[in-house]
Length: 145
Ligand SMILES: [Zn+2]
Ligand SMILES: [Zn+2]
Image (tube, rainbow, N blue to C red; front, side, top):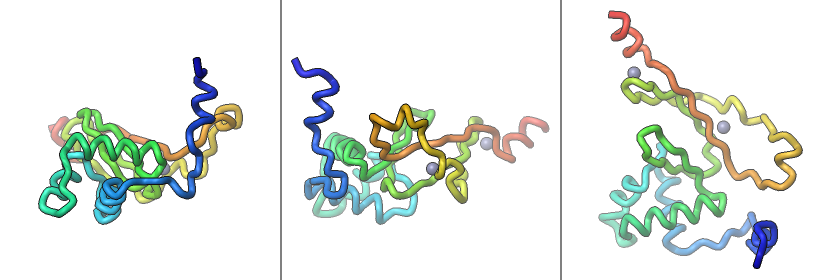
């Protein structure tokens, strides 16, 4: 039996040159093209008219591969939806728990925070997510009315 520790060693760790398929390249290009984050459905829809149309399950499977390769970041919304963006895009949001309105932060508040050494020793960090939840101006006013 192969232990967890050994399995990890078998995985290729050539971070600089991850081998990705034509499809994955296409998905990555689609995410880079768009200024905003995209859900799997969005990507699927955008590719639908093009030559590189692929099934929704294929889109999700390949997006997951790109996340594992450290090329794409994903974040889970409270609605269960998952949004994808190129990993180099370090963007965070304020989300209203009432109406769901989302506002982008201008910069990353935790960019220069490092993992505690004890944790980072056996962990290759690819990306982080950071979510702020609260009430937007409209909802505060609505609640006070
Ligand atoms: Zn709101
Ligand atoms: Zn950040």
